[in-house]
Length: 175
Image (tube, rainbow, N blue to C red):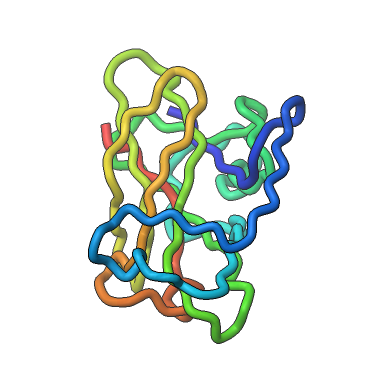
């Protein structure tokens, strides 16, 4: 299994440009997300450095350098593991607006299965020394995204700016 990440839409040969303002789609009946949320912004927070675990084997350089690309580069650089339980974690850039609320965050990985047999992985968020493993997913033999959306602190309670800024994010080879 090889993992990398990127942020953005489209590819170099088929770019997509979206200019959307105040577009809201809600499908969680009875939740706070079915009311107007006000003026919001969405930001991508890139990987900025190594976290507290680097158990996958990097194809080159350091693990975090193989997942800090602005656009996915496939097999150019990646981290790989054949060991169930291995975890890579990374630091991310702080929330861009000091004092702003954090309503939700999504962790995305760009990965593929590179060996025969069953393979599963999961997103990991580390908070206050504890790893919170997301939903187990099964990558295919072609690159695809694995992701988890969080509308609360994985440790419990509301999302705060200070907690968000302290999170490490990454992935785990489950099987």
